[in-house]
Image 1 (cartoon, protein in one colour):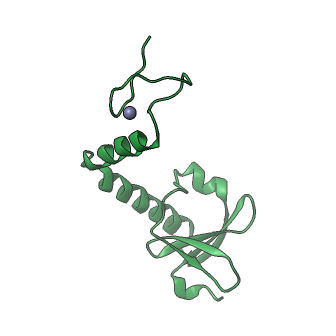
Image 2 (cartoon, helix red, strand yellow):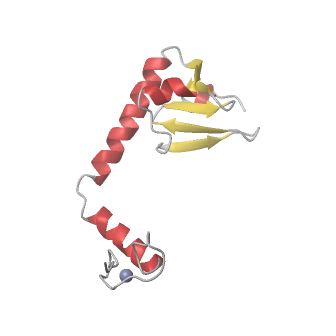
Image 3 (cartoon, protein in one colour):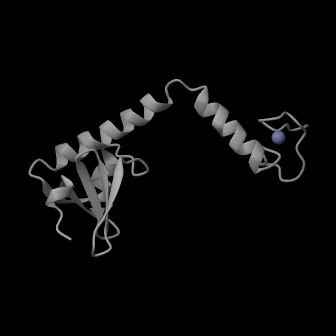
Length: 120
Ligand SMILES: [Zn+2]
């Protein structure tokens, strides 16, 4: 069966899991997809708001240690955040709006609220 590039529809050669001729076709296809998806921004916003809501729920007092699994079970998406904060100590906090987290161990997370509460 002939396989075609998902972007330019040219026949593909080589690996059977190949979907595009090359990186140019791949990124072209992905860009078109984003542009034509009116829900793209809404979808990301929904993820960010859900992340914020989960952290707000688990961290009502502004600072709390939790397990990473607790967040995962509630549907937290670790790929999305609004911004990061790098401290002088070299640790990186990930924020969704005013709520943030820091990975302290493999499976442990420190939840924080507001950048101002983080000291160095
Ligand atoms: Zn192509």
